[in-house]
Length: 212
Ligand code: B1M
Image 1 (cartoon, rainbow, N blue to C red):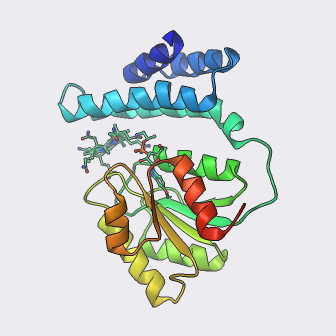
Image 2 (cartoon, rainbow, N blue to C red):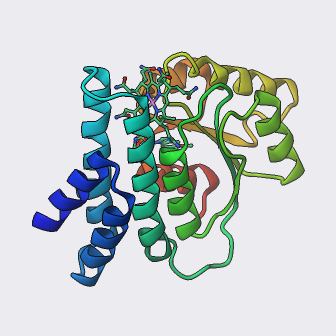
């Protein structure tokens, strides 16, 4: 689809205005928001990641691409969130301490809100205690953690340990996600579920909380 390639290309160039405009056009063309997201915005961001890894581009380029990604997500957000529904439960979500990657976490939050959950977004670089404090304070059914760096993944285990110490482990379910994670890693650290993306996060949170 031509317009999706254009969105991907503009995102790779860090052209915020073009990404916003093209995403709006794609919506007008009645493309599904998920298709625009997956085959336009995320596809572009994946190329950015590969080029960054192979030193073809540098950090400022990645920052510009991230800004452009947000411009596209802003256009799609109202379509993905839908009408607000009676809340199906509360999820405390954040990117773990030391990690500033929040695009994926924000997408997951949007999808969970769209599915009717109340989402308390703690942002990025969130210390372990804060996940547990906020879960307790808000009687959350689920803690959701995101990590994009192999170096920050171990923070998740600290949160699990803290949840055990405070006696909320088992009652408050713990889900984890992010590109370097796996179901095996989630099991190893004692999380209740690994989620590959926003859709699987919604499915797993529904399973874990019994929400329909
Ligand atoms: Co960084 N970065 N980055 N970066 N960055 C990666 C992650 C990297 C893989 C790039 C690479 O080398 N190819 C690499 C990590 C290597 C590793 O650890 N194995 C890397 C690096 C090295 C770094 C720095 C260390 C670079 C440096 O300073 N030298 C630095 C670290 C800063 C820090 O965090 N302390 C850094 C910085 C940055 C920016 C700030 C410039 C920017 C982030 C901006 C922002 O988020 N606001 C950035 C970006 C944009 C990326 C890439 C290119 C794209 C990430 C992204 O947003 N993807 C990334 C390469 C890549 O992943 N392809 C890279 C799109 C997003 C929709 O996908 O986040 O995977 P993702 O989320 C998905 C799923 O993973 C899942 O659902 C989402 C939707 O499908 N998911 C969950 C995520 N969280 C979930 C939680 C859940 C459930 C599912 O439940 C709770």
